[in-house]
Amino acid sequence: MSWCRALLCARCRCPVPSPAATRLTLRRRASTGPSKPVGFRPDRVAVVTKTTRYEFEQQRHRYAGMSEEELKMLLALKGSSYNGLLQRHNIHSENVERIVESLRNEGIEVRVVKRRDYDEETVRWADAIISAGGDGTMLLAASKVHDRFKPVIGVNTDPVRSEGHLCLPVRYTNSFPEALRKLYSGEFRWLWRQRIRLHLEGTGINLTPVDLHDQQLSLEQHNKAHHYTPEQTSATVSGPHLLPVRALNEIFIGESLSSRVNYKFCKPRFTFSLHRASYYEISVDDGPWEKQKSSGLNVCTGTGSKAWSYNINKMAPQTVEEILRIVTSHKKLDLPLDSELIERVTNEYNDSLIFNPEEQKMFFSVREPIANRVFSSIYQRGFTSKVSVRSRCWDACMVVDGGTSFEFNDGAVVAIAMEGDDALRTVLLDE
Image 1: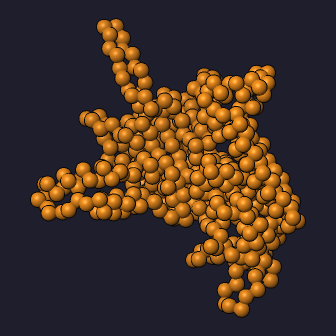
Image 2: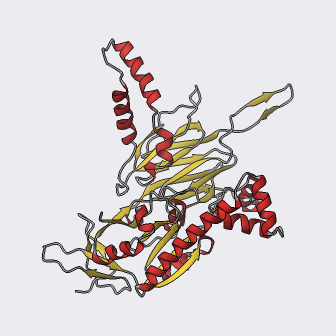
Image 3: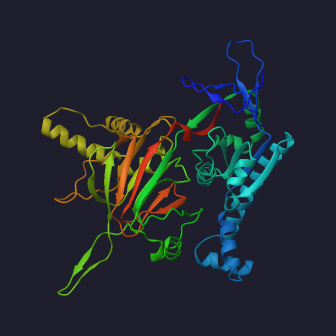
């Protein structure tokens, strides 16, 4: 029996045969048991590589006519090591070369693209995508893949400087042929990471995304990127529009400078506001709308539950100890608050914030909510299947996986939800 781009069994997610023709060749591994693992051997692979810090600095200053020696001096003034950046760049480049060589040795056609050149045409050409970098490169590679049957595999090309949670285990960085062997022989399972989709509607919305790349935009660059003319503003409600990106980690909504405090200076003739907190209305699971002010809203997947969301909500042992002391004093409990108990309670709470990437649910977190007689914080955090947000902001962004930004100002409404068809096909190798 020939195997092709497979349908999935609804119960166990195992591939089942489909009559459709495809270049992807799924091969059965010889086995005498009732269950025969299915191997994976792509014909075409796109390798998406990150922009190293060395490349970024070199490209940025080349346009200013700066020589390599002048770049060395500038980096030294900023406290950065030119030789150190070059060394990390060379380590990354050598690992990319190993990946490409391993693929070509197997007769696989390879296309290497820098992240700035990665586009939909490359995705259509490839049978599989390999991200060569860290988690940021993996998120970028995944963002343009809408075909749930096209695998995306991450390889960490600089494990010393990059955590690489979304990538293959570190040992495969230097032994990528072993990873290929496991793919061919079926020594893996598909990990279907759920993703978030966004429907945007409202007045004066701007559907043009801004690619934030690896490096943070300056405030001036950000303002230019998000600038639009009055002619683009409309009083007519538009949408809903399904945005062309899917969030593998999280969505963040907030004012562009939400880190500043909302100080106001009052004088006889005017009031000057130094900055605004993020002002919006929120509805959880189609419930009632609630006005909120905070430093922003985070909505994550199971994949993203180990990332920013975790760090927003996790508790430190010191906090847990202080809470337990208050509880024991009020309840007159004879509870020994030793370090072992405090660590166990802390870990149990923090572990509850993490959930399976394949679960079709989300976790929302309101960062530093303001609570007073006008604004409440009933919806502060929790699991959900849908979150709707109506912007009342002046200069806000909706950022997808830290890499793609959309304007989200007064009048814009977004529905944040999941669909099973948006799941990303990734690999979990047998160990």
